[in-house]
Structure formats: structure tokens, C-alpha cells
Length: 514
Image 1 (cartoon, rainbow, N blue to C red):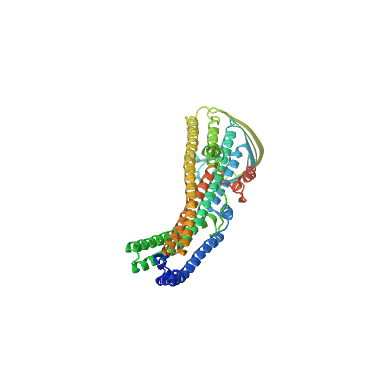
Image 2: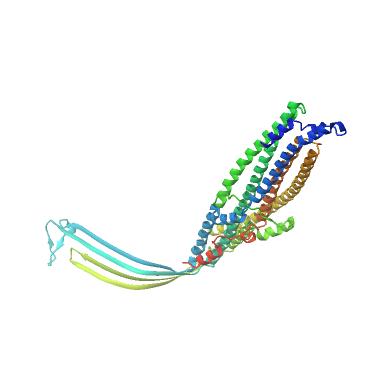
């Protein structure tokens, strides 16, 4: 390790820089030796710091990729979106089912029936005697076979058409279309939810990668500080309390690093589940995710018009009102027209009398049926009251949803402001730690401070960068939540390619099917 070399050189007299007198002319040679001795650890330390800065720069350059590729992949492969898409496609068929009330019903009827019966008749009983031509009864006993065959074949076609059902069919179709539109915006809400989650997980991955890199650098710095503290304790320069604090800092950093690594693996699994592909090596940090000039009041107004959940609730309310306006079938007459054409063929044969009949029939029937309902036991009135209650519930649900969105916007805006302030503070802290590290390096060069002071300053810089990364992740996550709340987490707003499925085109294509 680099700092082991520093420690070996420091053992030869690096601490002399702190205690060597500067006003003694007789010690010029000794001072020269001391200065020469200090050049080596100074050079090694400078190289270590430059290497750390170079690695940090390379890491920042390497940590690049594309959030938008992840979002586009989620639109195509996310299972929640695909499930909602198929559910929406199935809902479109409801329009076809309800519009069938306006179309004629055509049926083809065919029937074949054959009856064959056989039996025995006894003629010895008084009431079953036969008579001759003279009218005299024929005495005797015996049986005679009798039976008949009868076959019927019928085929035809029937057509029926609904003429008027009190406009209830039209109202039901309108209610269905409004419910389908509510499902449209429910589908949009699901897409925005998935895109929001992908963005949050994406930024969490960026943050965890940065955290792991910062924690590794911090761990290395604290291990070096621990080694320096142990060496200085052996020389009597510090107390064992300093050593124990250094050991505790190393253990704390190791624990944070292990936790960050586990969280990174968890975020990778979530990312793969949401997007359908593995985490790329390069990830890109978008420059801007949200317009910070939007106030909380403006956000609430935007959400009322753009939040897909609110729009879906509005469509549900309109559908409930349409159901209330449906005519009451208990008092509305209905008119139906039907036409049928039949062709039947019948043949029968009596085996006793050896007689047979055959006949054919052709004919058509036209019927106009008018039905005026009088009373159905109160079911229609109960259904009417049910729709009124459901419409009231839909109105209350919409208002409750708007209140929930307002509460969430208030919380997210406060969180975003706090995250922004934390990020600004963290950036200032990083700048201050960088200046402190530079001052520590310069003072070390001049012999005012020792190498441990430089290591402590470097350790504080890494810790400040770690806190900056966490603050940046909180800030980006709150921006994603804010954007989704006001309904701007859409492919159009994000300027990414949407999937090939268009629910409006699919609905227009489906509704004309029969």
C-alpha cells in the first residue's frame, strides 16, 4: 500500500518538520537533511492525491448511459404495462357487445324429428271387440300389431330488430364509452407510474454507484488514518483514544459499504424487472428533469387538468351520471320487429291401417311486438336509486382524489425544496473540504502539519462527496415524483418513443367490428 511507504519514511523523521527549530543557523545541515527527508513522503502523498482525483474524474466520465433507453424499454417490455394494455383491449370489446342491441339478430333454424312407436292390441275384451259388415260382433281372442312412424323436417331463417327500447340502449352505450375512456387514463396512469419508478430506480443506481466509489475511497483513507494513528501511538505522539476512534471509523465505513453494495444489487433487480434488460455499464445523468419554476399552486392547477388519475375519476363520474339518466324500463315501452321464414316437411305411416300422410309447408311470419311494462316488483326503481348512489360516490371519490393529490403535491414540493437545499449545502461542503484539503497539503509541504492532517482532510472530502451523492439522489427522486403528480411523466413530455400500441386507434378499429 502507498501509505505504508509513507509510514516507513515518516519513521525516519517526518515528524521533525513539526518540531525542528527554524531560527538556528548551526542546524542548517540538519535542516537540509530534514527537508530532504520530507521530500519523499510529500511526493508520494501528492501522487496519491493526484491519483485519487484522476480516479474520481475517470469515474465521473465512465458513469454515463441513457435513462431514456431504459424508459423506452420499459414501455415495450414492462409486464405491468403489457397487462394493463391487454385489459384495456378487452374493455374495448364491451362497446361492441353493447352496440349489438342496435343490430339485427339473424338465426338459422333446422330441425329433424322422427317418432316410431310399436305396440300390441288385444280384442278379447268386451270394450275392445270388432264388428263385421253386418254389425255383429266378432268373438275371439288374439292380438294385432299396430304402430306408426312420423318424421318431421323443418328449416328456416329468422330476423329480429330492436326498434325502440326507450333510448336505454343508447344510454348504456354512452355509459360504456365513458367507462372505456376512464380505463384509457387509468392505463396512462399506470404508464406514468412505471416511468416514474424506472427513473427513481435509475437515479438510485447512479447514487449507489457513486456511494460505493466514495465509500471505497473513504475506507481506504480511514484505513490509512488508522495505520498512521497506530504508528503515532507507538511513538507516543497520540493517545490510544485516537486509535480507537480510527478503528471505529473504519468499521463504520465497512458497514456502510456492505449495505450500499446490498442495496445496489436490490436496485439492479428492480431495474431489470421494470425495464426488461440488465443494468448497462454506462449510465447517463440527465441535465434536467423538472421545471423548478412551477410553484405549488400552479402544480395543483396543472394536476387537475393533466393528472391521469383525476381525469379517469372524472370519466367515471360522467359514466355514473349517464347511468342515472338512463330511462326507467319500468315505465318505458319497447318495440321489436321480427321476421321468420320456415319450410317444413312431415310424413307419417300407420302400420295397422297401412295409411300414410305426407305434406309440405312453406310460410313466413312478420311480427311487430309492442310491450308496455306496468310493474316489475320494484326492481327498476331500486336500480335507479343504486345508480344515483353510485354517482354520488363517484363525485365524492373524485373530490377525495383531488385532495389526496393536493396533499401529495404539498409534501413533494416541500421535499423537493429541502432536497435542493441539502444538495446546495452538500456542494458547498464539498468545495469547503476541497479547499481544506488543499490548505492541508500546502501546510504539510511547509512543515506546519503532518501527514495525518492531510489524511483527515482527504477523509472528510470523501465523506462530503458521499453526502452530496445522497442529496443529489433525493433531489432527483423528488423531481420524478413531482413530475408524475402533475401528469408530465409521459413519453411526449420526456421526448421518448412510445410503444406501438395506441388505445384510441385500437378503439376506433374495434368499435366497427360485428
